Length: 184
Picture 1 (cartoon, rainbow, N blue to C red):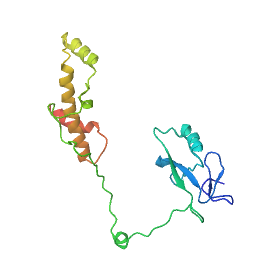
Picture 2 (cartoon, one colour; picture 1 turned 120 degrees about the vertical axis):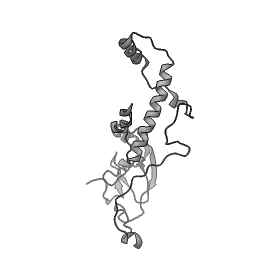
Picture 3 (tube, rainbow, N blue to C red; picture 1 turned 30 degrees about the horizontal axis):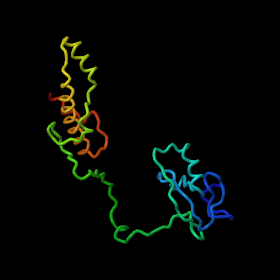
Picture 4 (cartoon, rainbow, N blue to C red; picture 1 turned 60 degrees about the vertical axis):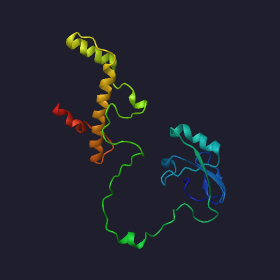
């Protein structure tokens, strides 16, 4: 018998200790959506049982969400709702991907003089590798301030690539998003 079926003793069994959870009783579910879906449907009779679930689940950040079991009846099947009449008659269309941006973020390319947070002002270039390359090619030395200038240029290039990916409806920046560099 699986955990998702009602038993004579209660609503469902705890996914950890297998004790029955009574109708109308308090129980806990994992805050991670993959743990409380229809296929898994993990339920726990106590926080202690929930905590026993965490090492195997390997969640980065999860919590126990308190819920109440139904008082009677078959609660395992989700209630079926009829769609509104205008929604049922609407023609089917492909869902569009929409990317929301946080307020105050600039999706356009940002110049080096733009307002960047302190975290985005970090050096993006491995200084020792760049210095080694320049020295191997020309036997020249490299100033430390070169890293800041190159990092600013890299930010502008990356911002343009992000804009290219966004305009194509992707959330992954790919090599083809840097095609504009071939003109240089």
